[in-house]
Length: 326
Image (cartoon, rainbow, N blue to C red; front, side, top):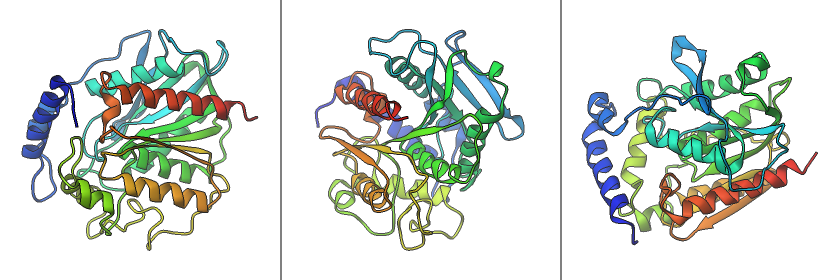
C-alpha cells in the first residue's frame, strides 16, 4: 500500500505512542495518550458546544456548513441533521479532538448538513453500555430541547445517525434502542456506518489475512479494545460486538432505517462488516454497501487520500436518496 510520507509518519507516531499508552491490564495511561489527543475549541458561529448532562460530561459540538461545493441535500431553509459518533475503539478521542473536529467540519460542509458530534464517555473507565446510553440520551435531548437551543435551520425530521469505527457500532445500537422511543421531532432517515467496529470470537478470513500488517487498526489492538470496553468476563461474542452472533437477541428490522455501510478492503474487520450487512438484510433492512479497494481502517480522516472524498460523496448520495422518500 502506497501512502504519502506525511500520512505514514503520522500513523507511525500515533501507533508508537498509542501502544505505549495501552497497558496489559486493559487500562490506559491517559497522560501519555494525551500527546496524541490535542483539543481544539469551537469556532463560532460555525461551531458551538452544547451541554447535555454535565454530571457525566455528556455534550455535543454542533457544526453548521460554512461553504459547500456539493449540491444541497435539502432546501436552504432546512438542513438535515447528522448525529455523529466518533471512532476510537470506545476508549480514545473526543468531539473536540483536533482531527475529529476537522472531520466533522468537513462532513457538515460536504453534505450541507448540520452535524451534531457527540462527546460520550470512554472505556475502560466507563464500560459498555455507558457509550450506548450516552448516544441515545443525546438523541433524546435533541428531540426534547427547545428549538431555540439548536442551530437555525436544523430539520430533525431529516435526521441521520452516522458513526465511524466504534462510532459505527455505537450508531447501530442507538438506532436499535431508538426503535422503542416515541420521538416528537426526530425522525431517523438512515444509518451511516463508516468501517464499523464489529467482531466475534471466530477469526474471519480478512482478520487472518491482514492481521497486524495494515495501518490504522491491527487485529491485536481490536482485541484489546474489546477487552477494555465489554463488561468484565465477556468475550467477543457479546451482543455489543457480535450483533448477529450466538448470544444476541432476536433482531427486528421493522423500525430500523435504511443503512449505508462503507468498507475498506485493507481493513481486517471487513468480513465482520459484511456479516453485519447480511444480518440486516435477513431482518428486512434496506442496505447499501460500498467498498473501497485501497482503504484501510480510518482512511476517511485523511483528507489527502482520495477514499476520504469518495466516501463523503457516497454518503451525500445516500442521504439524498433517503430524503426523497416521504
